[in-house]
Structures are given as structure tokens and as C-alpha cells.
Length: 242
Image (cartoon, rainbow, N blue to C red; front, side, top):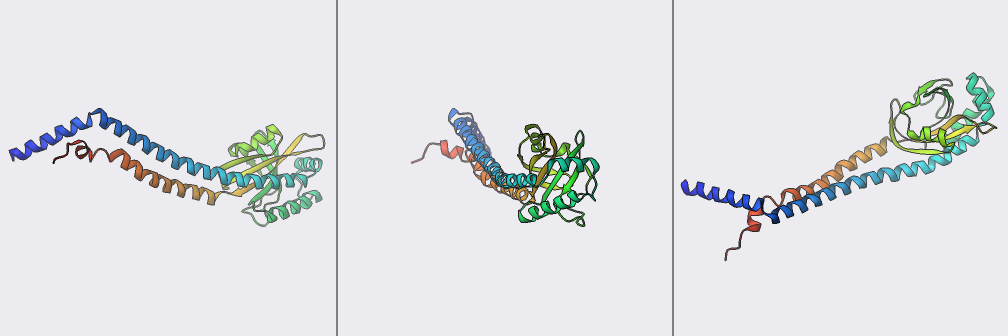
């Protein structure tokens, strides 16, 4: 028993000498560095996937909202935004045009809004669905707080140009990739905004799945590099016996 305890003590002392050695610390530092590189590469790969898909939606969305804006007469839209009269012939005529455009493309929502006050905006003409589809259709005059909308919403109002945003979660609507363009009257003043949204739920789920997979893939070599040197250290540094 005394010999066994002495042997264990000698091994502990030997391991501590190895652990405190400069060579071991260098290997451990290098292993942690490699592990970090593996994890960062995995994370960047997932983010690049998100950006690539979002950019693809954006390219398609730009053509959709700009086509939608071309179907809208700015002066008539401005007048409609003041009355919010669903019986106005211009409302139904333009609603049908926007609905046809939406059905021809791959977006899930296509609509127009006008500012009420501050961040409160109201839907004017919604081409997302038929009026009986209460889940997708927003009635004229229905108000919404846009403070949580994609930042591209505000950029479009400031720049006066078409702006696209990345994947964003919107309460009541889910994960969306949105594109916006201003609606202008004959004098060039912005009187509203036209927008199209793409369903980002599949993209979001794909990103989460890839994050988990890449973390596992990157984590295995990371763990091996981090902890691998610790366990075989004694054998690695011990002199070979002939």
C-alpha cells in the first residue's frame, strides 16, 4: 500500500511538472486557438448562409415592390389614405392589381401603408389576400405600430429609395424578410410605403439547425484540441524506455 501511494504521488508530481512546463502551456494555448478558430468558422458559415438567402429574397423583393409602386397613382393613394374609404373605386381596382402581382410572385404579403402619427401607420391597400382571408388580409384603415418593423422600413422613408432588410421576427406575423419602397405623389413627396414580405420561417429553422450542426462539428475537434493534451501529457513528455 505504501509503495502504491508513493507511486501515485510520484505520478502527480510528474504531471504537475509537465502541466507547469513552458512546452505544455504552448501546446495547450495552441490547442485552444485551433478550437476557437473551428467554432468561429462554424458560426461565420451559418451567418453567411443567412445573408446569402436574405440577399436572394431582397433581389426578388426589390422588383416586386417597385412594380407594385408603379401600379399605384400617388395622388389617388394620398386622397384614399385621408378618407380610408373602401368603397372608393380606386381602392378595389388597385387592390386587385396588387393581389394579382402577389400571386404571380413568391412573396407572402404585399401591401401599402400610410402614416397616421409617429410610429403608428395604417394599412391602405392590401394585396396579400382576398378580404375574406382574415389571417393574411388587413382591412383599410387598420392601424399598426411600426416601431418593431425591420430597420429597412425607416431607411426607405429617409432615403426615399427601395430598401431591403434581413431576417426579422415580427409579433403577430412571424419570421419575415421584408423589402420596402416609398409611394410618392406627383410632387415627389412621400405619402406612403409599399412593402412585400417573404416567409422566413423555413430560413430561420434552417439557420438554427445549421448552428446546432456546425457547433457539434466544430465542438468535437475543439474539445479534442483543448483537452487532448491534458490526458496524454504524461506519456507525451515521459522519456522512452528502451
